[in-house]
Image (cartoon, rainbow, N blue to C red):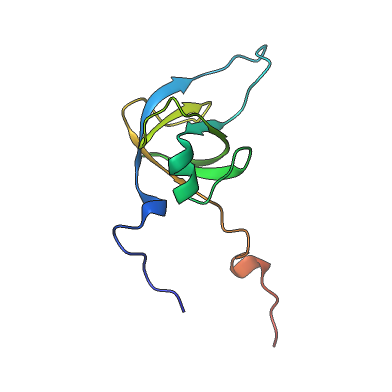
Length: 109
């Protein structure tokens, strides 16, 4: 049985949005992406190219993770994430692919 996470859990600390890129349909690289410091990614158990949940103040979305050593710890740069603006706080969380929720569980009567 798992309880609530401690308040100082490094995997759930908020990150500040320092950059935002909105692409156009003609752009070669498009789609949701989060660039973050490799140390921040490591504490969240994320690797480059993996998908992660980006929880913003208004909604959440899956985005590709890219590592960028030029970003300071605690900062992220986002591409094509709706509902987030620079200087806001977001949480980047590794998806729990082992838990399928109530809908994915077999029902035994």
